[in-house]
Image (cartoon, rainbow, N blue to C red; front, side):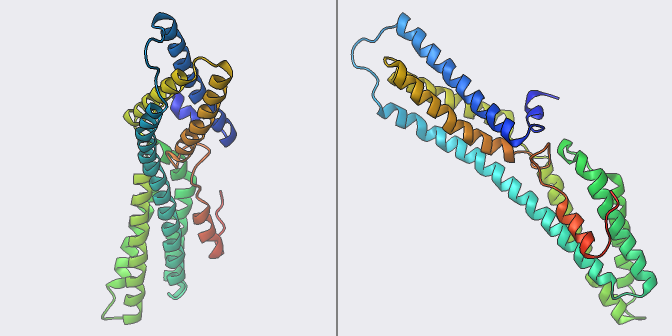
Length: 267
């Protein structure tokens, strides 16, 4: 497990502290570099003006905004996929209520086994980009059952209609699960993080250069800079890889889907 992976197993508070501390250390490094340059290359002529900082912060903010937007969209897509999967599970169980006792039990057992398998076995490995073969098997069996019911058009039209509806809901489960697996495999790639950190370092260097002659002013602006951008980095990190670590999308909607159908998951 590398350092970035370990961050996802921290609580929200400690992840916030690590992000702010990391940006503060980056800012201190920039201030130390500017102080060293002040000794080697003292000011001569016209000093740097404040408008330079504005020109640096604009692309920095744009880079961070692009990265944050990707992360938050992935998180929203993951939550929507889980909600849609839970809704389709509930609808499948609702269709099962109108089947004969034997068929109803068969469908309910398959839906229950699939949902339990996802909650118990698939959810813990989502963050590593894996999926559970058992969940795949139960879903395939559920689709086979729906197709079998739908094929009874000549013998029993009402049964065929129920099979058609069940197939539609099982298809929704498949699509939602596929979307969930795609989101689980997404993360902020290293080039994006390098770009963000380089832009922050450049902005911190300009900030330090503007306030290098006043210790109090330098301490205040670097602290505020670290706190402000540290919170921004935290908001990116806490929503990145939404199925990994402690700050994750939970399987609670799927559990509620079983609970509403009076099938309490034995986990």
